[in-house]
Image (tube, rainbow, N blue to C red):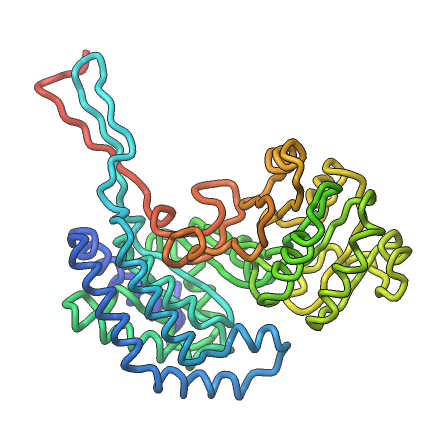
Amino acid sequence: MHIETEATQHLRRAANAAREASRHLAKTGEDTRNAALRIMATALRDHTQEILTANAADVGNFNGSNAFRDRLTLSPARVEAMAKGLEDVAALPDPLGRVLADWTRPNGLNIRRIATPIGVIGMIYESRPNVGADASALCLKSGNAVILRGGSDSLHSAAAINAALVNGLEASGLPRACIQVAPNADRAYVAAMLAGAGLIDLIIPRGGRSLVERVQQEARVPVLAHAEGLCHTYVHAAADPAMARAIVANGKMRRTGVCGATETLLIDRAVAAAQLPSIVADLRALGCDFRADTAARAIVPDLTAANDTDFDTEWLDSTISVGVVDGVDAALAHIARHGTSHTDAIVTEDTAAAERFLAGIDSAVALWNASTQFCDGGEFGFGAEIGIATGRLHARGPVGLEQLTTYRYTIRGNGQVRA
C-alpha cells in the first residue's frame, strides 16, 4: 500500500484548492482580476515593514556571495517596485479570450482558437523573494492559480510577501487558494510537486543549474525551464569603441547576480589591441575580476589565465571571462560551444555583420548594440516576468502573460454533419 508523505498530503490539498481557485479565476472578468492586483499592490505597501523585518531575518542567516546577498536583500524601494509591478501587470491587456486565429471551412464551419489559462502552475525558485510577487501577479492576471516554493534562503521573506498578497486577494473577494506557498523549505515538497501529475499542470523552475537539472530529471509534470544565463557580449571589428565600453560595463556590472548579466566578453582580434585595454580598465574600476584566454593576456598581460571550465561558468558575480575571436562565425561557434541559449549580444556598426549574428545565434534573446541586462520581462513591456525560458517548446525568453496561456477551439455551425 502506498502511504503518502506529509509533503505529498499537503501538496495534494493545496493543488485541489488551487484547481478550484483556477476554475473560479477562469470565469472572472478582466476588471475583477485587475482590481485584485491593485488591492494586492496596496497590501504590499501596507505590509512593507513586516516584509522588511522578515527579509532581515533571511539576510542575517545568509552565508553566501555578495551578488547572491544582493538578490536576497529587500529595501523599501524594492518592495515598492514589487507593488508597482502588480499595478503594471493590471494595466496590461487581458491575455484571456484573445482570438488567436479565426477561419471558416468550405462546409461553413467557423473555427476559432481562443487563449485560455493553463490551470495550476507550480513555481520553484531560489533566493530572490520578489519572484513570488511577480509570479503571483502574472498567474492571477492570466487566470492561473499558483503554488510557490521558494528557497530556504528566502523562506521568511516569501511567507511575509504571500501573507500580504493573500490579504489583498481576500479583500478583493477572490479565493485565498489562488496564491499559495509551500509550508517550509523541505526538499520533499519539491519532490511532491515534481510528482504531481494531474495536480499541477506546469512546473516552472527558476534557479541554478542543479535545481533546473533536478526538475528536468524528476518531473512527471510538463516543465517550462529557466536554464542558467551564460550570456555573451561580442565586440565586433566595426563596433563603436565608446558604445562597446558602455555596453560591456553595463552588461556585466549593473547587477552581477541577474541571469541576464554578461558572463563572457568576446572581442574581435582586429580591434582587440586597440579596445580591450580600455574595456578592461572600465571593468576594473567597477570592481571586476577576469579570466582570459592566451590572446587576451597577450594584450593585457596581468589578466588571470582562464582554465578549462571558466568559459562554461555562469559567474553571477564580479568576474568575467574574456576571449579573442576571429569574426562573426568564430563568435557564433564559441557561443554555441559554451553558451546556454539564454541571451547574447553583438556590438557593431556593420549592419550585415549584425544581421548575420542575429540570424545565426541560437538563443532565446539576441541583441544588437544593447546591454544583455535588457533581457527582462519588465523591459520587454510584460510588466513582470516569471522567468526566462530557454527551451524549445511553448515559450522562449521572458515569460509573461501570453506565455502563461494555452488555447482551445470553438466551432460554430448551422447544422453540419460529417459524411
